[in-house]
Length: 421
Image (cartoon, rainbow, N blue to C red; front, top):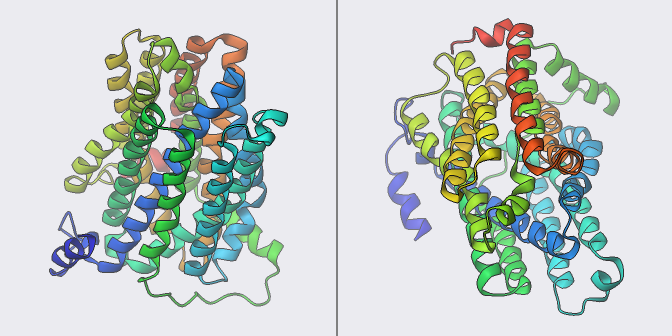
């Protein structure tokens, strides 16, 4: 069925004014399906792991430690992952790291077996250990995916491809949590992890038909440390790029409530299915916004759209914290996802358009440290804040901090604020 769909979709030649232009490139369609399957498995895993750890410990702090366990190796290795993505075949890196994630998920499956001695003796620690390894895999995978995308589609379609690529991500983000919640409610942890392992492994088969691309020229005189420094200096020397990254970093760091959703599900008197719906709500809003952006590019008055969307994200986070009604909470979470998707598309388009081909891996790794790790560090911050301030005040505080950050960066990055295209 996927092959028939791709054949029909790619029969027409892509046009820059076509909302489906990038999808008409067959290899980009395979790339999108690969990312969909991968993220579907990863997001399902996030729900399963969060639910399992919370059931083992019953403590919000333990949910924050899940994020910290992945963030530490991710931050430590990401720059090297970007360097490797600029000198080694990116397709091979994607396949190798996907296999490693498959093995990690299989290990989590083994921990879910009844009477597992590792869990009995050490509680959630074995789970944290595996999540630590997934952080290493992500550090190498992220830059390679980012750089590989720019080799598949022409420059004129980068904004369109970014929209559809993030749509695939968010679609998987909505299906994964719901599927994870449904499986947890109707079956067992073992079955949930088994399906999760299969999904992550399946993504490899969509990458295989894509042709490997030649690597860009490398400066042979440059040492690895000089190479890493070049990528960092490039990002920090560009006010627009640095401003966009900083805005998303602090918004996700302070404004995210995702790590605390198991606790909010309990507060709203919901079971695993309700938890899955809450977890999926932001992605649902993101998908609806993606459809709008496919027809109306957010890059028109990009600076204004970026600052407004992040400010609105913070405001909706505050409202969610104080909501006492399940479906109102779902709607508010959906709005956070919609506004977040605007900032994601603008940020990724800026990075793709402004980054030279031979630096995409390194620039992506800096972006990953800013944004990818901020989800995990944000989860740790949320757990710590919930312990110190209480669940609801901590999330409301995070939303307020996000709104303050918008004002600060608007003053510090006028080029980003005034950016129109």
